[in-house]
Length: 115
Length: 115
Image 1 (cartoon, chains in turn orange, brown):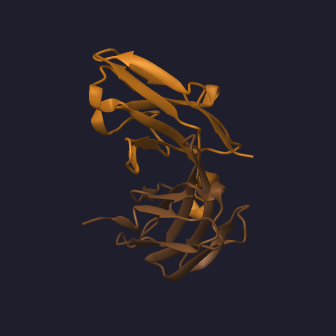
Image 2: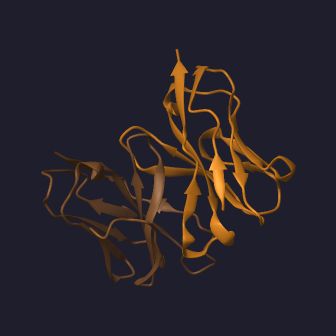
């Protein structure tokens, strides 16, 4: 069965420091991979996605992620975080290349920004 | 214009009551979903509909009944509410004129509190 693992439940980073959030997936075929962000009391906003091609994808708000098939990973990075980046981050994978099956989400990583 | 809108945003009710949450999308998508987010922020798919046809019906109590009058609307009715139903319920949509890659567009969520 498809699954997504985000090993870090909480991460604390100082403002201005770099960030990497880890995501590993278990999936037999080429995955469609996503990162979403959820600010407190809000819905989920798409940060970036990977379908095929260049394994380094750029997203909104200065985020990027790199797909590494050999490691079954899709880690999210940002070179310098801002206080407004404090939120819950979810990695997700699509079943069978998309369709109506929805996304399988990781359990999320709660990002705390220290001043 | 709100792409995926759900009402109400907050719902507080007593155990045993029946309640409904409505969802509408104006993105022209073919597929709509209901996800449940528990107190630990875990997101789990409940249902998906494609062009008014039920596609996914996860292990959800029969007290939960989705209804899709047309492909732009997917409502969720819950009978005999229980304490454990307290959660945030997210509506989402995907698809459109091109291939459905699984990317989801979320509403802002409906926070249900059962007392």
